[in-house]
Image 1 (cartoon, rainbow, N blue to C red):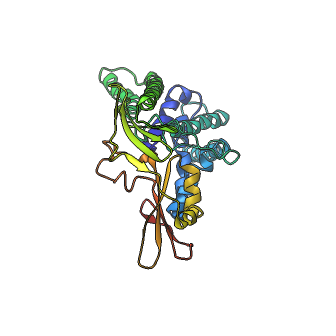
Image 2: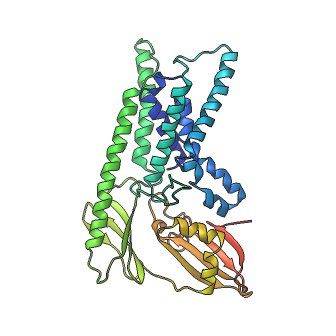
Image 3: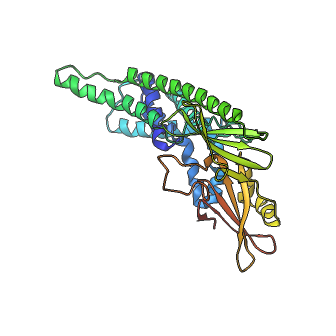
Length: 349
C-alpha cells in the first residue's frame, strides 16, 4: 500500500485501546506501520538495486523483531528527552507492551502489502516465494476514507463538545477506530469474493483454447471491476471483467499478447542482475527483444502482465501496454554482455 494508508492504519490500531495500555503507543505504532518501507534507501544504489531489495528483509517475519526494537529504542530516546524537560505521559510507560504493539503494527504493514498484486516474501530468506492476495489496489480510496474518518471525526466531535461545555476526555476515538478496521476487513472479504467471481467468469468464457493460468488484478474503489490475465499455450489474453454485470470485455485484436521467441539477447538479458531479480518476482513476465541499434546493441524489455492496465488514478500518466509500471530494460552488446540496465526509465549506474 502507499505510505499514508500504512501510517493511518498504525494510528487506528493504537486508538482501539492500546494507547491506554502504554504511553507512546500511538507514536510507536504509527511509525512501525510504515517502518518496513525503509528498504527504499536501497534505491540510492540505483533503480535495479532498489528493485532487488524492495519488500526484502524488512518485509519478513525475521526482520520485524529487529525493526520493533529500533522503533522502541527511538521512542525511549524521545521519552528521556521529554522527562528532562519535566513532561510526563498520561498513560503508564510499559516498554514490553510497547514492543509488542510495535510488532502488531509492523505485521499490519505486511498484511496490507500482501493484499496487493505486487506481493510480499514474509518467509525470506528461508523461503523466497512471493505471496500476493491481489484483491486491493495499491491505493484504495474506500480504505483511505474509512481510516481518515476514524482519525478526524473524534477531533471534530471534540470541538463540538467543548462548545457545549463538556470536559475534554483523553484517548478519544476508540469506537471510530474499531469501526474503521472492521469495515476494512469486511471490504476485503467482499473484494475477495468478487475476485473469485471474476476469475470464474473469465474461466467460463469460451475462446476456443485451453487456459493454463488465470490471474485477477484489482481496480481502485470498484470491487466489481477486475483486470484478468489468461495464459494459453501460445499467448496471453488480457480482459476486463465486470462481476456485477457478469461481463467479460476483451478484444482479440488488441488484448492478445503472443509469447515472444527466445533469442541470444534475451537469454543473456535473463542472466543479468535485472533479469534474475525480475524473473524471481514476476508471475507473468514478458521478456522480448524490442530492437537493435546501429552498434549492434540489442534492447531486451521486461514487462509484467499484472500491471498492464489503466485505472482512473493512472490513466494518461503511463502507457500501460508498451511501458507499464515496474518494467525494465537490459542492453546487450554484440559479445552478449550487459551494456546497461534501467528500471522504469531510470538507468542503473
